[in-house]
Length: 147
Image (cartoon, rainbow, N blue to C red; front, side):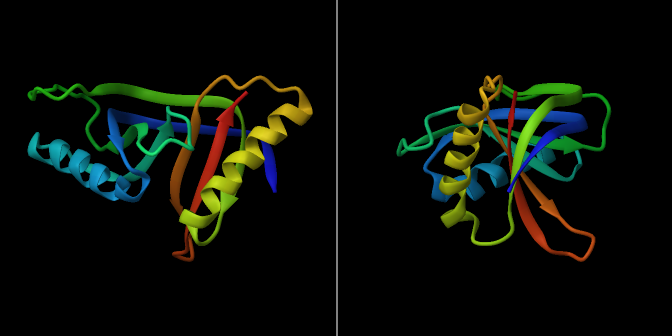
């Protein structure tokens, strides 16, 4: 199912670009988290990324976003990172993946693209992937595209 009028909104977001094979996204996320930790910053569990490359390519280019508790950011490393005190994208269309993310992500991506085409929407952002947790502790993923 695809939902319209979705939005992404976070405060105090740091991002970094990564290239990796899709199976190694966890390595990139842990690397980014450790870079921020070494700078004395505190991530608070919100993580999402945007897919900047063609999803069928072997090596994926993505911008990974982590929210931090601090409202100021000073980069004391050689790493290229970006800080936004507020990050918002709207309007968007969104689809949710409740289980087996690896198998369902390609299918959901093409579902979103087809939905755009069928309704004459223009894609204005890359695909965003948000990792979420329900109040009952269930993990799920939301894939969305800005229109």
